[in-house]
Every structure is written in structure tokens, then in C-alpha cells.
Image (cartoon, rainbow, N blue to C red; front, top):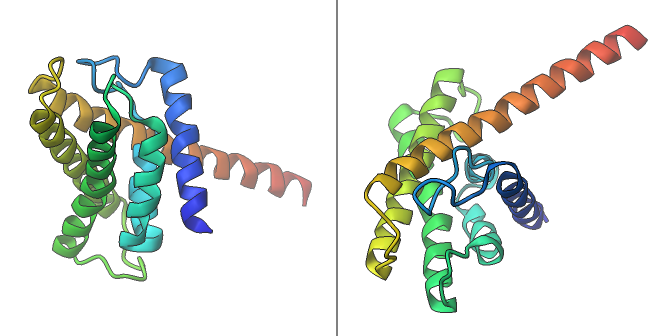
Length: 173
């Protein structure tokens, strides 16, 4: 059930991001802020590697770039694997406990950087292999930055919403 929710959240954030700023506005492959990147990080923190199938399915509904079906499948697989693998590496290197009991703001920043870097490397590599003509080496940087900014926009929106809800609740009780 959580996999379905993560897929739906990814797709919804994808279309919201596209509506706000365009998902291929930078270098034809990236967004200035890519909101669904948050789902890669959240999903791995919640369900570990089980987020990969959810991301893959969501990618099939989102990836376009004018690609044929085989190429869409390849790109969807890359973006499903790259981010979670980056989170896994950073969580192991930083000593994050599976219970997340030692998750700090600094660790969260490092995890999001690992997720963004893992995704941008996998995405860039796959586009290179597929020979996507519009793709440039600067696209790698654009994807990383868009993923980082998108992830942190969602994190801060959640933070602000919980603070607002807490304020409203404390005034009524």
C-alpha cells in the first residue's frame, strides 16, 4: 500500500513541478526544482530498497523527453535505482541507524545530497548510453541542483505546515 502511495505522490509532485516551472526547462533534462526528488529520499527512509519498484512505475508515467518505450523503461529504471542507491551509500557512511533514531538535520542534508547525486549520475549515464542529443554534461549538474532544491522545498513546506497546524491547534485547545 505504501508503494502505491509513493508512486501516486511522485506522479502528483511531478506534474505540480512541471506546471510550476517545467521539468525539462534546464538543458532539456532538468528542472530548477524537481519536487518528486523528495519521494526518492522519503521512500528509501520509509521502506528501503522497496521504494525502487514504486519509483520505476511512477517513472513510466512521467518520463518523456521524446523517447521511445524501451528508452523510457531504461530511464525509469535509472531514476528508480540511482537516488535510493545514493541514500543507501550515504546512510551507511554516516552511520544512520535503521530506526532513524539518529537522523539529524546534517544527516538529512547529506542523505539528500547522496540521493541527488545518485540520481543525477544514473540519469546522466543512461541518457549518454541512449545518445539523447539534447543532453549535455551540464545536465548532470542541473539534475543534481534541481533534485536538491526540490527535496528541500518539500521538506520546508512540510515543516511550515506542521508549525502552522501546531499553532492553530494550540490556539483552539
